[in-house]
Length: 612
Image (cartoon, rainbow, N blue to C red; front, side, top):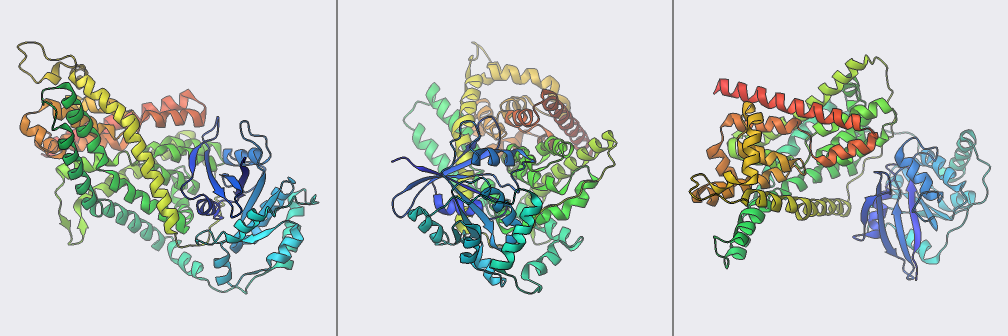
Protein backbone atom coordinates (compact mmCIF):
# COMPACT_ATOMS: atom_id res chain seq x y z
CA UNK A 1 0.00 0.00 0.00
CA UNK A 2 1.39 3.39 -0.98
CA UNK A 3 2.01 5.98 1.71
CA UNK A 4 0.11 9.24 2.03
CA UNK A 5 2.28 12.33 1.94
CA UNK A 6 1.71 14.66 4.87
CA UNK A 7 3.47 18.01 5.28
CA UNK A 8 3.86 19.87 8.57
CA UNK A 9 3.78 23.61 8.01
CA UNK A 10 3.77 26.58 10.35
CA UNK A 11 5.53 29.69 11.63
CA UNK A 12 9.01 29.34 13.14
CA UNK A 13 9.04 28.48 16.86
CA UNK A 14 5.58 26.87 16.81
CA UNK A 15 6.87 23.46 17.95
CA UNK A 16 6.48 21.94 14.49
CA UNK A 17 9.80 20.07 14.58
CA UNK A 18 9.09 18.73 18.08
CA UNK A 19 5.77 17.37 16.76
CA UNK A 20 7.62 15.87 13.80
CA UNK A 21 10.06 14.16 16.21
CA UNK A 22 7.14 12.83 18.27
CA UNK A 23 5.45 11.27 15.25
CA UNK A 24 8.46 9.93 13.37
CA UNK A 25 10.86 8.96 16.17
CA UNK A 26 14.06 7.47 14.76
CA UNK A 27 12.79 7.08 11.18
CA UNK A 28 14.00 10.52 10.16
CA UNK A 29 16.11 11.23 7.11
CA UNK A 30 17.83 14.59 6.76
CA UNK A 31 19.06 15.88 3.40
CA UNK A 32 18.76 18.99 1.23
CA UNK A 33 16.15 19.91 -1.33
CA UNK A 34 17.34 19.42 -4.89
CA UNK A 35 19.25 22.40 -6.20
CA UNK A 36 19.27 24.39 -2.94
CA UNK A 37 20.83 24.16 0.52
CA UNK A 38 17.52 24.26 2.40
CA UNK A 39 17.36 21.34 4.85
CA UNK A 40 14.83 18.63 4.14
CA UNK A 41 13.51 16.42 6.98
CA UNK A 42 11.34 13.42 6.21
CA UNK A 43 10.14 10.54 8.36
CA UNK A 44 7.54 7.79 8.39
CA UNK A 45 4.50 7.27 10.62
CA UNK A 46 1.86 4.56 10.86
CA UNK A 47 -1.54 5.56 12.21
CA UNK A 48 -3.41 3.32 14.69
CA UNK A 49 -5.53 1.96 11.82
CA UNK A 50 -2.44 0.99 9.84
CA UNK A 51 -2.33 3.87 7.33
CA UNK A 52 1.23 4.74 6.34
CA UNK A 53 2.29 8.39 6.16
CA UNK A 54 5.44 9.98 4.82
CA UNK A 55 5.79 13.13 6.90
CA UNK A 56 7.71 16.13 5.64
CA UNK A 57 8.81 18.81 8.10
CA UNK A 58 8.75 21.96 5.98
CA UNK A 59 10.91 24.99 6.86
CA UNK A 60 9.20 27.55 9.08
CA UNK A 61 7.47 30.39 7.24
CA UNK A 62 5.57 33.51 8.23
CA UNK A 63 3.88 33.97 4.87
CA UNK A 64 3.52 32.43 1.42
CA UNK A 65 4.75 35.77 0.06
CA UNK A 66 8.24 34.37 0.37
CA UNK A 67 11.13 36.63 1.40
CA UNK A 68 13.75 33.90 1.94
CA UNK A 69 14.81 30.60 0.32
CA UNK A 70 13.22 28.70 3.24
CA UNK A 71 9.84 30.30 2.63
CA UNK A 72 10.16 29.80 -1.13
CA UNK A 73 10.66 26.04 -0.65
CA UNK A 74 7.71 25.81 1.76
CA UNK A 75 5.44 27.70 -0.64
CA UNK A 76 6.45 25.71 -3.70
CA UNK A 77 6.19 22.30 -1.98
CA UNK A 78 2.70 22.82 -0.56
CA UNK A 79 1.52 24.29 -3.87
CA UNK A 80 2.92 21.29 -5.74
CA UNK A 81 5.29 23.48 -7.76
CA UNK A 82 8.61 22.19 -6.48
CA UNK A 83 10.52 20.12 -9.01
CA UNK A 84 10.97 16.54 -7.88
CA UNK A 85 8.50 16.84 -4.97
CA UNK A 86 5.05 15.30 -5.21
CA UNK A 87 2.14 17.39 -3.98
CA UNK A 88 1.25 16.61 -0.31
CA UNK A 89 -1.98 14.69 0.24
CA UNK A 90 -2.52 16.45 3.56
CA UNK A 91 -1.33 19.63 5.23
CA UNK A 92 -1.08 19.77 9.02
CA UNK A 93 -0.77 23.43 9.93
CA UNK A 94 0.85 23.79 13.35
CA UNK A 95 0.08 26.92 15.38
CA UNK A 96 1.31 28.08 18.77
CA UNK A 97 -1.72 28.18 21.06
CA UNK A 98 -0.03 30.76 23.29
CA UNK A 99 0.25 33.24 20.40
CA UNK A 100 -2.73 32.32 18.25
CA UNK A 101 -3.43 35.84 17.01
CA UNK A 102 -0.15 35.88 15.10
CA UNK A 103 -0.31 32.29 13.83
CA UNK A 104 -3.90 32.42 12.56
CA UNK A 105 -2.92 34.82 9.79
CA UNK A 106 -0.70 32.13 8.30
CA UNK A 107 -3.41 29.50 8.84
CA UNK A 108 -5.79 31.57 6.71
CA UNK A 109 -3.16 31.83 3.98
CA UNK A 110 -2.76 28.05 3.93
CA UNK A 111 -6.54 27.55 3.86
CA UNK A 112 -6.79 29.77 0.78
CA UNK A 113 -4.86 27.09 -1.15
CA UNK A 114 -7.86 24.77 -0.91
CA UNK A 115 -5.83 21.74 0.14
CA UNK A 116 -6.93 19.00 2.61
CA UNK A 117 -5.73 20.13 6.00
CA UNK A 118 -5.90 19.86 9.78
CA UNK A 119 -5.04 22.61 12.26
CA UNK A 120 -2.91 21.46 15.23
CA UNK A 121 -2.94 23.85 18.18
CA UNK A 122 0.40 23.11 19.82
CA UNK A 123 1.63 24.06 23.32
CA UNK A 124 -1.90 23.76 24.68
CA UNK A 125 -0.54 22.89 28.13
CA UNK A 126 1.33 26.19 28.31
CA UNK A 127 -1.72 28.09 27.02
CA UNK A 128 -3.87 26.66 29.83
CA UNK A 129 -1.27 27.54 32.45
CA UNK A 130 -1.42 31.12 31.22
CA UNK A 131 -5.18 31.23 31.52
CA UNK A 132 -5.80 31.13 27.75
CA UNK A 133 -9.05 29.32 26.93
CA UNK A 134 -9.51 28.12 23.33
CA UNK A 135 -12.84 26.66 22.22
CA UNK A 136 -11.50 24.23 19.61
CA UNK A 137 -14.98 23.19 18.50
CA UNK A 138 -16.00 26.79 17.87
CA UNK A 139 -12.72 27.46 16.06
CA UNK A 140 -13.18 24.35 13.91
CA UNK A 141 -16.72 25.41 13.04
CA UNK A 142 -15.61 28.90 12.09
CA UNK A 143 -12.70 27.68 9.98
CA UNK A 144 -14.43 24.67 8.50
CA UNK A 145 -11.50 22.33 9.12
CA UNK A 146 -10.62 19.87 11.93
CA UNK A 147 -8.82 21.46 14.88
CA UNK A 148 -6.88 19.29 17.34
CA UNK A 149 -4.90 20.01 20.48
CA UNK A 150 -1.28 18.86 20.73
CA UNK A 151 1.52 19.02 23.26
CA UNK A 152 4.59 18.03 21.26
CA UNK A 153 6.81 17.61 24.31
CA UNK A 154 4.48 15.01 25.87
CA UNK A 155 4.60 11.33 24.91
CA UNK A 156 0.83 11.25 24.33
CA UNK A 157 0.73 14.85 23.12
CA UNK A 158 -0.20 13.93 19.55
CA UNK A 159 -3.03 11.51 20.36
CA UNK A 160 -5.80 13.80 19.07
CA UNK A 161 -3.90 14.31 15.81
CA UNK A 162 -3.23 10.57 15.53
CA UNK A 163 -6.95 9.88 15.94
CA UNK A 164 -7.77 12.29 13.10
CA UNK A 165 -5.17 10.64 10.91
CA UNK A 166 -6.55 7.20 11.71
CA UNK A 167 -10.07 8.36 10.81
CA UNK A 168 -8.77 10.19 7.75
CA UNK A 169 -10.87 13.04 9.17
CA UNK A 170 -9.48 15.98 7.27
CA UNK A 171 -11.34 18.36 5.01
CA UNK A 172 -10.75 20.77 2.19
CA UNK A 173 -11.41 24.34 3.37
CA UNK A 174 -14.22 26.24 1.70
CA UNK A 175 -13.28 29.09 -0.61
CA UNK A 176 -12.15 32.02 1.51
CA UNK A 177 -12.99 35.66 1.03
CA UNK A 178 -9.82 36.81 2.86
CA UNK A 179 -7.58 37.35 -0.11
CA UNK A 180 -5.49 40.25 1.19
CA UNK A 181 -3.67 41.06 4.40
CA UNK A 182 -6.26 43.52 5.65
CA UNK A 183 -9.05 40.99 5.22
CA UNK A 184 -7.04 38.36 7.08
CA UNK A 185 -6.39 40.75 9.98
CA UNK A 186 -10.11 41.38 10.28
CA UNK A 187 -10.92 37.67 10.08
CA UNK A 188 -8.34 36.84 12.76
CA UNK A 189 -9.92 39.41 15.07
CA UNK A 190 -13.33 37.80 14.55
CA UNK A 191 -11.94 34.31 15.22
CA UNK A 192 -10.24 35.45 18.41
CA UNK A 193 -13.47 37.03 19.67
CA UNK A 194 -15.55 33.91 18.99
CA UNK A 195 -13.19 31.13 20.03
CA UNK A 196 -10.48 32.50 22.34
CA UNK A 197 -10.66 33.95 25.83
CA UNK A 198 -7.51 35.72 26.95
CA UNK A 199 -6.74 36.41 30.60
CA UNK A 200 -6.37 39.92 31.92
CA UNK A 201 -2.76 40.99 31.73
CA UNK A 202 -0.55 39.98 34.60
CA UNK A 203 3.19 39.65 34.99
CA UNK A 204 3.89 36.12 33.78
CA UNK A 205 6.95 34.04 34.53
CA UNK A 206 8.21 34.79 30.99
CA UNK A 207 8.03 38.51 31.71
CA UNK A 208 9.95 38.13 34.94
CA UNK A 209 12.64 36.05 33.25
CA UNK A 210 12.88 38.50 30.35
CA UNK A 211 13.38 41.35 32.81
CA UNK A 212 16.65 39.65 33.75
CA UNK A 213 17.94 38.05 30.54
CA UNK A 214 17.07 41.05 28.33
CA UNK A 215 18.53 43.64 30.70
CA UNK A 216 21.26 45.55 28.80
CA UNK A 217 23.85 44.96 31.55
CA UNK A 218 22.68 41.97 33.57
CA UNK A 219 21.56 40.15 30.42
CA UNK A 220 25.00 40.45 28.84
CA UNK A 221 26.58 39.19 32.06
CA UNK A 222 24.25 36.18 32.07
CA UNK A 223 25.08 35.41 28.43
CA UNK A 224 28.83 35.67 29.08
CA UNK A 225 28.52 33.44 32.14
CA UNK A 226 26.58 30.85 30.12
CA UNK A 227 29.23 30.76 27.42
CA UNK A 228 32.02 30.53 30.00
CA UNK A 229 30.25 27.68 31.82
CA UNK A 230 29.77 25.79 28.56
CA UNK A 231 33.47 25.80 27.74
CA UNK A 232 34.39 24.80 31.27
CA UNK A 233 32.01 21.85 30.95
CA UNK A 234 33.46 20.81 27.58
CA UNK A 235 36.76 20.03 29.31
CA UNK A 236 35.64 18.98 32.78
CA UNK A 237 32.69 16.72 31.95
CA UNK A 238 34.22 14.97 28.95
CA UNK A 239 37.45 13.76 30.56
CA UNK A 240 36.17 10.39 31.93
CA UNK A 241 34.48 9.48 28.64
CA UNK A 242 37.54 10.53 26.63
CA UNK A 243 39.78 8.36 28.81
CA UNK A 244 37.41 5.43 28.30
CA UNK A 245 37.41 5.82 24.49
CA UNK A 246 41.17 6.34 24.42
CA UNK A 247 41.82 3.19 26.43
CA UNK A 248 39.28 1.20 24.44
CA UNK A 249 40.81 2.21 21.10
CA UNK A 250 44.28 1.32 22.37
CA UNK A 251 43.16 -2.14 23.52
CA UNK A 252 41.22 -2.73 20.30
CA UNK A 253 44.20 -1.71 18.18
CA UNK A 254 46.53 -4.05 20.07
CA UNK A 255 44.07 -6.91 19.72
CA UNK A 256 43.53 -6.38 15.98
CA UNK A 257 47.22 -6.11 15.13
CA UNK A 258 48.50 -8.84 17.49
CA UNK A 259 48.44 -11.63 14.83
CA UNK A 260 50.30 -9.49 12.28
CA UNK A 261 54.08 -9.21 11.84
CA UNK A 262 55.20 -5.74 12.91
CA UNK A 263 57.28 -5.20 9.79
CA UNK A 264 54.35 -5.81 7.40
CA UNK A 265 52.57 -3.11 5.42
CA UNK A 266 49.19 -4.29 6.74
CA UNK A 267 50.37 -3.87 10.34
CA UNK A 268 51.61 -0.38 9.53
CA UNK A 269 48.32 0.54 7.84
CA UNK A 270 46.17 -0.65 10.75
CA UNK A 271 48.40 0.44 13.60
CA UNK A 272 50.06 3.62 12.28
CA UNK A 273 47.33 4.67 9.87
CA UNK A 274 43.86 3.69 11.05
CA UNK A 275 44.21 3.42 14.84
CA UNK A 276 46.77 6.20 15.24
CA UNK A 277 44.68 8.41 12.97
CA UNK A 278 41.01 7.65 13.55
CA UNK A 279 41.53 6.86 17.22
CA UNK A 280 42.95 10.31 17.76
CA UNK A 281 39.75 11.83 16.35
CA UNK A 282 37.13 9.57 17.95
CA UNK A 283 38.38 10.46 21.41
CA UNK A 284 36.95 13.98 21.01
CA UNK A 285 33.37 12.84 20.40
CA UNK A 286 32.31 13.45 24.06
CA UNK A 287 33.47 17.07 23.94
CA UNK A 288 31.65 17.70 20.67
CA UNK A 289 28.43 16.19 22.02
CA UNK A 290 28.64 18.24 25.23
CA UNK A 291 28.95 21.41 23.16
CA UNK A 292 25.96 20.36 21.03
CA UNK A 293 24.00 19.50 24.18
CA UNK A 294 24.19 23.07 25.42
CA UNK A 295 23.36 24.55 22.02
CA UNK A 296 20.28 22.32 21.69
CA UNK A 297 19.10 23.13 25.22
CA UNK A 298 19.44 26.88 24.63
CA UNK A 299 17.61 26.55 21.32
CA UNK A 300 14.77 24.41 22.68
CA UNK A 301 14.28 26.61 25.74
CA UNK A 302 13.55 29.73 23.68
CA UNK A 303 16.66 31.58 24.87
CA UNK A 304 18.49 31.94 21.56
CA UNK A 305 16.13 34.52 19.98
CA UNK A 306 16.46 36.57 23.16
CA UNK A 307 20.23 36.41 22.94
CA UNK A 308 19.91 37.67 19.34
CA UNK A 309 17.77 40.57 20.53
CA UNK A 310 20.17 41.32 23.36
CA UNK A 311 23.19 41.41 21.05
CA UNK A 312 21.52 43.39 18.27
CA UNK A 313 22.91 46.78 19.28
CA UNK A 314 26.46 45.47 19.71
CA UNK A 315 26.34 43.53 16.46
CA UNK A 316 24.86 46.48 14.57
CA UNK A 317 27.82 48.63 15.56
CA UNK A 318 30.06 45.94 14.08
CA UNK A 319 28.13 45.85 10.81
CA UNK A 320 25.86 42.90 11.62
CA UNK A 321 22.34 42.53 13.00
CA UNK A 322 20.87 40.51 15.83
CA UNK A 323 19.54 38.05 13.24
CA UNK A 324 23.15 37.09 12.56
CA UNK A 325 23.50 35.70 16.08
CA UNK A 326 21.77 32.37 15.46
CA UNK A 327 23.64 31.62 12.18
CA UNK A 328 26.91 32.52 13.89
CA UNK A 329 26.06 30.41 16.93
CA UNK A 330 25.22 27.52 14.59
CA UNK A 331 28.69 27.98 13.10
CA UNK A 332 30.17 26.92 16.44
CA UNK A 333 28.88 23.47 15.55
CA UNK A 334 29.76 23.72 11.85
CA UNK A 335 30.07 26.70 9.53
CA UNK A 336 28.09 24.94 6.80
CA UNK A 337 24.66 24.99 8.53
CA UNK A 338 25.59 28.40 9.95
CA UNK A 339 26.10 29.83 6.47
CA UNK A 340 22.91 28.13 5.29
CA UNK A 341 21.02 29.67 8.22
CA UNK A 342 21.80 33.18 6.91
CA UNK A 343 18.84 32.71 4.56
CA UNK A 344 16.71 34.10 7.40
CA UNK A 345 18.52 37.46 6.99
CA UNK A 346 16.49 39.38 4.43
CA UNK A 347 18.91 42.24 3.74
CA UNK A 348 21.43 40.99 1.09
CA UNK A 349 24.24 43.15 2.45
CA UNK A 350 23.82 41.90 6.04
CA UNK A 351 23.54 38.32 4.79
CA UNK A 352 26.77 38.58 2.79
CA UNK A 353 28.65 40.01 5.77
CA UNK A 354 27.40 37.20 8.00
CA UNK A 355 28.42 34.56 5.44
CA UNK A 356 31.94 35.98 5.22
CA UNK A 357 32.52 36.04 8.99
CA UNK A 358 30.79 32.74 9.81
CA UNK A 359 34.01 30.70 9.16
CA UNK A 360 35.66 32.65 12.00
CA UNK A 361 33.38 30.99 14.52
CA UNK A 362 35.15 28.07 16.21
CA UNK A 363 33.49 25.00 14.72
CA UNK A 364 33.43 21.61 16.46
CA UNK A 365 35.99 20.31 13.94
CA UNK A 366 38.56 22.69 15.46
CA UNK A 367 37.86 21.31 18.93
CA UNK A 368 40.10 18.22 18.55
CA UNK A 369 43.04 20.44 17.55
CA UNK A 370 42.42 22.90 20.37
CA UNK A 371 42.05 20.26 23.04
CA UNK A 372 45.10 18.32 21.82
CA UNK A 373 47.34 21.39 22.05
CA UNK A 374 45.81 22.72 25.26
CA UNK A 375 46.16 19.36 27.00
CA UNK A 376 49.77 19.08 25.82
CA UNK A 377 50.99 22.59 26.70
CA UNK A 378 48.58 24.08 29.28
CA UNK A 379 48.86 22.60 32.78
CA UNK A 380 45.73 21.04 34.24
CA UNK A 381 45.28 23.22 37.28
CA UNK A 382 42.58 25.19 39.05
CA UNK A 383 42.43 28.98 38.98
CA UNK A 384 40.97 30.86 41.95
CA UNK A 385 40.00 27.51 43.44
CA UNK A 386 37.10 27.13 40.98
CA UNK A 387 37.98 27.43 37.29
CA UNK A 388 39.80 24.95 35.07
CA UNK A 389 42.79 26.68 33.44
CA UNK A 390 42.46 24.59 30.29
CA UNK A 391 38.79 25.57 30.07
CA UNK A 392 39.74 29.23 30.41
CA UNK A 393 42.18 28.94 27.51
CA UNK A 394 39.52 27.22 25.39
CA UNK A 395 37.06 30.01 26.23
CA UNK A 396 39.67 32.59 25.15
CA UNK A 397 40.13 30.81 21.81
CA UNK A 398 36.39 30.83 21.18
CA UNK A 399 36.20 34.46 22.25
CA UNK A 400 39.06 35.29 19.86
CA UNK A 401 36.96 33.89 17.00
CA UNK A 402 33.96 35.99 18.05
CA UNK A 403 36.02 39.15 18.45
CA UNK A 404 37.75 38.66 15.10
CA UNK A 405 34.36 38.18 13.40
CA UNK A 406 33.10 41.47 14.86
CA UNK A 407 36.27 43.28 13.80
CA UNK A 408 36.12 41.90 10.25
CA UNK A 409 32.43 42.86 10.01
CA UNK A 410 33.28 46.38 11.25
CA UNK A 411 36.02 46.74 8.64
CA UNK A 412 33.59 45.64 5.92
CA UNK A 413 31.04 48.19 7.15
CA UNK A 414 33.71 50.90 7.19
CA UNK A 415 34.87 50.06 3.67
CA UNK A 416 31.27 50.35 2.45
CA UNK A 417 30.87 53.65 4.31
CA UNK A 418 27.62 52.18 5.59
CA UNK A 419 25.71 54.51 7.91
CA UNK A 420 22.21 53.07 7.43
CA UNK A 421 20.14 51.50 10.20
CA UNK A 422 18.38 48.16 10.19
CA UNK A 423 15.50 47.53 12.57
CA UNK A 424 15.34 44.06 14.14
CA UNK A 425 11.83 42.61 14.16
CA UNK A 426 11.53 39.07 15.46
CA UNK A 427 9.17 36.95 17.52
CA UNK A 428 10.28 35.94 21.01
CA UNK A 429 8.82 32.47 21.63
CA UNK A 430 7.52 31.39 25.01
CA UNK A 431 10.02 29.79 27.34
CA UNK A 432 9.69 26.05 27.54
CA UNK A 433 11.44 23.20 29.28
CA UNK A 434 13.51 21.30 26.69
CA UNK A 435 12.20 17.79 26.17
CA UNK A 436 14.69 15.00 26.77
CA UNK A 437 13.53 13.06 23.68
CA UNK A 438 14.15 15.97 21.31
CA UNK A 439 17.55 16.67 22.87
CA UNK A 440 18.48 12.99 22.62
CA UNK A 441 17.40 12.83 18.97
CA UNK A 442 19.40 15.96 18.19
CA UNK A 443 22.51 14.56 19.86
CA UNK A 444 22.09 11.22 18.10
CA UNK A 445 21.86 12.96 14.73
CA UNK A 446 25.01 14.98 15.50
CA UNK A 447 26.83 11.84 16.62
CA UNK A 448 25.84 10.04 13.41
CA UNK A 449 27.08 12.97 11.33
CA UNK A 450 30.41 12.95 13.18
CA UNK A 451 30.80 9.17 12.97
CA UNK A 452 29.87 9.25 9.30
CA UNK A 453 32.65 11.78 8.74
CA UNK A 454 35.04 9.56 10.70
CA UNK A 455 34.03 6.52 8.69
CA UNK A 456 33.96 8.43 5.40
CA UNK A 457 36.14 11.37 4.51
CA UNK A 458 38.36 11.18 7.62
CA UNK A 459 38.99 7.47 7.09
CA UNK A 460 39.78 8.01 3.41
CA UNK A 461 42.13 10.89 4.12
CA UNK A 462 43.81 8.96 6.93
CA UNK A 463 44.51 6.02 4.62
CA UNK A 464 45.76 8.46 1.96
CA UNK A 465 48.09 10.09 4.47
CA UNK A 466 49.41 6.68 5.47
CA UNK A 467 50.07 5.84 1.82
CA UNK A 468 51.86 9.15 1.21
CA UNK A 469 53.89 8.66 4.39
CA UNK A 470 54.85 5.09 3.44
CA UNK A 471 55.79 5.26 -0.24
CA UNK A 472 58.28 5.40 -1.74
CA UNK A 473 60.40 3.64 0.84
CA UNK A 474 63.79 4.78 2.04
CA UNK A 475 66.73 4.05 -0.30
CA UNK A 476 69.57 1.75 0.72
CA UNK A 477 71.94 3.31 3.18
CA UNK A 478 69.39 5.94 4.29
CA UNK A 479 70.09 7.35 7.75
CA UNK A 480 66.93 9.43 8.30
CA UNK A 481 63.49 7.96 9.14
CA UNK A 482 61.80 6.42 6.09
CA UNK A 483 59.02 9.00 6.13
CA UNK A 484 61.53 11.71 5.18
CA UNK A 485 61.86 10.07 1.76
CA UNK A 486 58.14 9.52 1.22
CA UNK A 487 55.76 11.68 -0.84
CA UNK A 488 54.42 13.25 2.32
CA UNK A 489 57.90 13.92 3.68
CA UNK A 490 58.97 15.60 0.46
CA UNK A 491 55.80 17.75 0.42
CA UNK A 492 56.23 18.64 4.09
CA UNK A 493 59.84 19.73 3.61
CA UNK A 494 58.83 21.80 0.58
CA UNK A 495 56.02 23.57 2.45
CA UNK A 496 58.32 24.12 5.39
CA UNK A 497 60.01 26.96 3.51
CA UNK A 498 56.67 28.81 3.54
CA UNK A 499 55.67 28.03 7.11
CA UNK A 500 59.05 28.14 8.88
CA UNK A 501 58.65 31.90 9.65
CA UNK A 502 55.58 31.11 11.79
CA UNK A 503 57.28 28.25 13.64
CA UNK A 504 55.69 25.25 11.91
CA UNK A 505 57.79 22.13 11.40
CA UNK A 506 57.43 19.87 8.39
CA UNK A 507 55.14 17.46 10.25
CA UNK A 508 52.66 20.28 10.87
CA UNK A 509 52.90 21.27 7.20
CA UNK A 510 51.83 17.76 6.20
CA UNK A 511 48.84 17.86 8.57
CA UNK A 512 47.61 21.20 7.22
CA UNK A 513 47.00 19.82 3.72
CA UNK A 514 44.42 17.09 4.51
CA UNK A 515 43.09 19.39 7.25
CA UNK A 516 41.48 21.41 4.48
CA UNK A 517 39.31 18.38 3.71
CA UNK A 518 38.19 18.09 7.33
CA UNK A 519 39.71 19.95 10.26
CA UNK A 520 39.71 16.84 12.48
CA UNK A 521 42.06 15.14 10.01
CA UNK A 522 44.87 17.43 11.15
CA UNK A 523 44.96 15.45 14.40
CA UNK A 524 44.81 12.05 12.70
CA UNK A 525 47.47 13.17 10.21
CA UNK A 526 49.80 14.21 13.02
CA UNK A 527 49.17 10.86 14.71
CA UNK A 528 50.08 9.00 11.53
CA UNK A 529 53.14 11.12 10.75
CA UNK A 530 54.63 10.87 14.23
CA UNK A 531 53.77 7.17 14.52
CA UNK A 532 55.86 6.56 11.40
CA UNK A 533 58.69 9.01 11.95
CA UNK A 534 59.60 8.70 15.62
CA UNK A 535 61.54 6.32 17.77
CA UNK A 536 59.95 3.28 19.37
CA UNK A 537 59.50 5.22 22.62
CA UNK A 538 57.80 8.05 20.70
CA UNK A 539 55.50 5.66 18.87
CA UNK A 540 54.47 4.10 22.16
CA UNK A 541 53.59 7.50 23.63
CA UNK A 542 50.35 9.39 23.23
CA UNK A 543 50.32 12.06 20.54
CA UNK A 544 49.93 14.82 23.12
CA UNK A 545 53.03 13.63 24.94
CA UNK A 546 54.97 13.43 21.68
CA UNK A 547 54.27 16.98 20.57
CA UNK A 548 54.81 18.32 24.10
CA UNK A 549 58.33 16.87 23.96
CA UNK A 550 59.14 17.94 20.38
CA UNK A 551 57.43 21.31 19.89
CA UNK A 552 58.15 24.60 21.55
CA UNK A 553 55.40 26.50 23.34
CA UNK A 554 55.76 29.22 20.68
CA UNK A 555 54.97 26.71 17.91
CA UNK A 556 51.91 25.40 19.76
CA UNK A 557 50.56 28.92 20.34
CA UNK A 558 51.18 29.84 16.70
CA UNK A 559 49.28 26.76 15.53
CA UNK A 560 46.36 27.67 17.80
CA UNK A 561 46.36 31.17 16.31
CA UNK A 562 46.43 29.66 12.82
CA UNK A 563 43.35 27.55 13.50
CA UNK A 564 41.43 30.53 14.89
CA UNK A 565 41.48 32.15 11.45
CA UNK A 566 42.26 29.56 8.77
CA UNK A 567 39.41 28.51 6.42
CA UNK A 568 37.59 25.65 8.07
CA UNK A 569 37.45 23.22 5.18
CA UNK A 570 36.85 22.93 1.45
CA UNK A 571 33.19 22.12 2.12
CA UNK A 572 32.73 25.49 3.84
CA UNK A 573 34.19 27.32 0.86
CA UNK A 574 31.96 25.30 -1.47
CA UNK A 575 28.86 26.32 0.52
CA UNK A 576 29.93 29.98 0.36
CA UNK A 577 30.08 29.57 -3.42
CA UNK A 578 26.63 27.95 -3.54
CA UNK A 579 24.94 30.41 -1.18
CA UNK A 580 26.34 33.52 -2.90
CA UNK A 581 26.51 32.07 -6.42
CA UNK A 582 29.84 33.86 -6.74
CA UNK A 583 33.36 32.50 -7.24
CA UNK A 584 34.60 36.00 -6.45
CA UNK A 585 33.09 35.97 -2.96
CA UNK A 586 34.47 32.49 -2.31
CA UNK A 587 37.92 33.63 -3.44
CA UNK A 588 37.72 36.72 -1.23
CA UNK A 589 36.79 34.60 1.79
CA UNK A 590 39.64 32.15 1.12
CA UNK A 591 42.23 34.90 0.64
CA UNK A 592 41.37 36.99 3.68
CA UNK A 593 41.07 33.99 6.00
CA UNK A 594 44.45 32.57 4.97
CA UNK A 595 46.02 36.03 5.25
CA UNK A 596 44.64 36.53 8.75
CA UNK A 597 45.75 33.05 9.78
CA UNK A 598 49.32 33.58 8.59
CA UNK A 599 49.63 37.06 10.12
CA UNK A 600 48.15 35.93 13.44
CA UNK A 601 50.42 32.88 13.62
CA UNK A 602 53.48 34.98 12.66
CA UNK A 603 52.76 37.61 15.33
CA UNK A 604 51.99 34.98 17.97
CA UNK A 605 55.14 32.99 17.26
CA UNK A 606 57.46 36.00 17.20
CA UNK A 607 56.00 37.53 20.38
CA UNK A 608 56.12 34.18 22.20
CA UNK A 609 59.75 33.66 21.12
CA UNK A 610 60.69 37.15 22.30
CA UNK A 611 59.09 36.55 25.70
CA UNK A 612 60.53 33.05 26.13
